[in-house]
Structure formats: structure tokens, C-alpha cells
Image 1: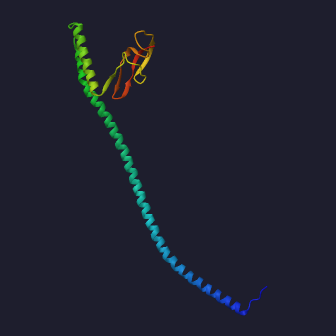
Image 2 (image 1 turned 60 degrees about the vertical axis):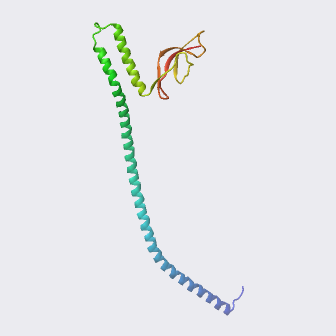
Image 3 (image 1 turned 135 degrees about the vertical axis):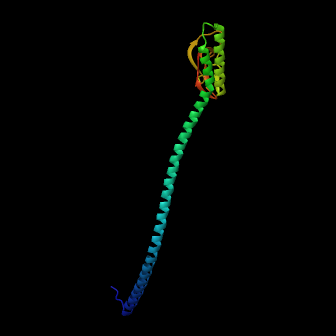
Length: 190
């Protein structure tokens, strides 16, 4: 073991006392800083609490606005549907009136030719109303079969037509703009 001299011990004690006094001074400064930090911490806490309350209120308002938006768009959708339906119904009322007139005529007094002509006029009127709303007939007879527009129910050998040509239409097909609402029911050549 190494023996320490008295001077070394004194020197060591002075260093220890210096360190102790520095520690005490730092501790006092930290205590003062803690008091300041506690006040600052309380201010920060209050600010964060206020921010949280503000964000919470904004979230609640945003959620209420979204619910109101959903309800409003649902009402608008229903209104649009009702308006579209009402518009078509209003356009078809004159056609219905003409059918009522035709059904009110005594058949014994009119001849079949006049009755046919009246029904044909009502048919043309109905067709005009539907075409004004965007209805288009799908052309089919003597056309190439297209599964997007035609529904083949029968295939038949035909010497007069190319393969996959529509040779007879059982039921007309219709589309509104580019959307097929009913495909044509057809007979196709083999």
C-alpha cells in the first residue's frame, strides 16, 4: 500500500470541500430552477390543456358538420330522384290522356283502321317523350351480334347471312346515353 503524506491528505480534503461546496451551490441553483420550472411547467400544462380543449371542440364541431353534410346530401339525393321521376311522369301524362281518349271511344262506331291509326299516334308520342329523355333503340336486325347490346336466345343455320349476324329480333333493346337498360332479344345465324 502506498502511504499518503499529510500534505496529500490535506490537498485531497481541500479538493473534496471544493467539490462539496460546488455541489451545494449547484443544488441551490437547481432548487431555484425547480421553482421557476414548476411555474413554467404549470403554464405549459395550462396552455396544453387549453389547446386540447380547443382541439376537442373543433373535433366535435367537425363531426357535427359532417353529420349535417351526410343528412343534407341524402335529402338532396332523394330530392333529385323525386324530381327526375316527377319530370318523366309529367312528360308521360299527355300520352296517358290519349290512351284514356282511345279507350273511351265506342269501338262499334269506329273502324279498325282509325283505331290502329290512333294507337300508332299514341305510340309515336310515347316514343318521342322517351327519346327526349335520352332513350335510344339498339339497332339489331342484320347487325353483327354484340353481347354488350344483344341477348341471343336462338341460333339458326342461315345461308343468306354471315355467321353471328342477327336475323330476327324478338324484343327491341334500349339504352340511355351509353348505358344499356335492356338488351335486344335476338336470333343469331350460325
